[in-house]
Length: 123
Image (cartoon, rainbow, N blue to C red):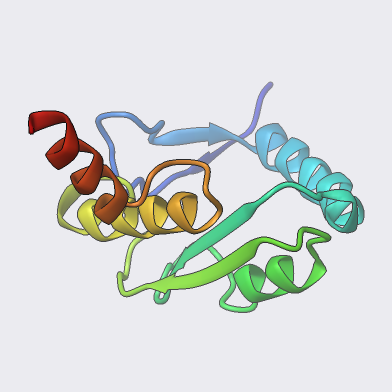
C-alpha cells in the first residue's frame, strides 16, 4: 500500500492535501543531484525565498546562491510567511524582483528602457 502524508497546502485549490511519501524521497534525490551541480550553472540565476517560509530552511536560499557558478546571480528575501510566493498579495513584489533581475542581466528591457522606447515610437 502507498503511504501518504498530510500536506498543509498553502494553495489547496492547486495542491494535493495528501502526498505520497515516495514523492518526498524523489524530491530529496533531485535536490541532492542538483546541489552537486550548482557550480556548473553558468547562466543568470535568481534565487527568491520567503523570509518566514515554513517549508524551506532559512539557510537554503543563501546556500544555493553561494554555490552557483553563475557570474550574474542574485538572492533576495521576500517578506512573506508562506511557501507560495507567486500567488496572492505578495506576487507583485516577486514579479518586480524578477523583472528587475531580467533587466539587470539585459534579458529584457528595464521598465525605464521600455517606457523610453514606447515614447519614441509615439512621436
